[in-house]
Length: 238
Length: 140
Image 1 (cartoon, helix red, strand yellow):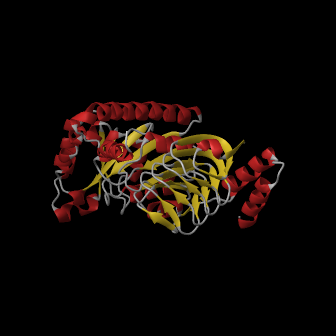
Image 2 (cartoon, rainbow over the protein chains, first blue to last red):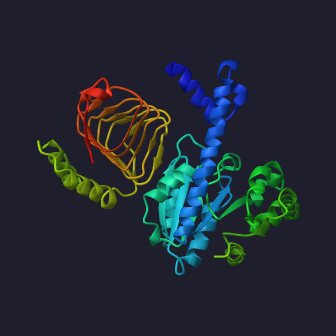
């Protein structure tokens, strides 16, 4: 196979769109996609087993850019850093801005700059776990790359996944992104302190989340004022 | 760290390689001296970096490359497309081809590995070669 063709397949793989594959390579692309998904699931399972073996509780936090994932982690870490030895893995396209913010609250951070990839995957987490002394930690947070689409393709192997949205994203944001709510245990509606001013219908957001996933716990928070942060910690059983 | 890298280079350049000592020094450098993310000096199209990673100046990095954790790459080196490098030290002015997967390796200064599709762990690599049969490989 020529280098050009290999590159073409690689790009299609990244786009995860089999519809773009020409007939000649369609089978190969489908096969590759299935293998990537299966390998990710296997690695995620391994990650979880390893973390549990070392008695580390783990939470993956997904959400759009600006929803308040970093601010929520800052607040949680501020409260829990006396009780737990915390490691936070931060996924971003580039920079270590979020990791620096979180690190100032007594948690160790590891930055992953994903470059052109729009989500962390189980292999990223596996590589970090393999290279860390896991006995040094009790609690792991993973802040995924900011968006509500790509992270639904990859589980990471954490005990729980939280999806964070905010009142500034509008009341349709949950309805428009059902996949992540289907695979999360907790939905956080952040920036409730702004809801009244923005006229966002929070009740609709809560109902949408429950309709998509009847088992999901929904909580409204404000990372700015600290509203319901302790309740979120309780829900996470931390 | 510069001193330790120099010491490592000297150890690898000796005729009789003291492999346990090389491995210990490599581990010491990667564990205690490679910290955070210092990646300002690369030329390329947004590869994936997993901390800790330290890059020298003017490093060229191709597409779909994954670097880290625990990687040092010296100045003027070139990493081509689809490379994956972890737990490794690559000295200055090194060139590697496409689709290299290296874990726990050291590549000596001025090595040019001008071939593609190479997957190796726990080794020292050196030389200028057009195929993997012609490079010097020592197991760590």
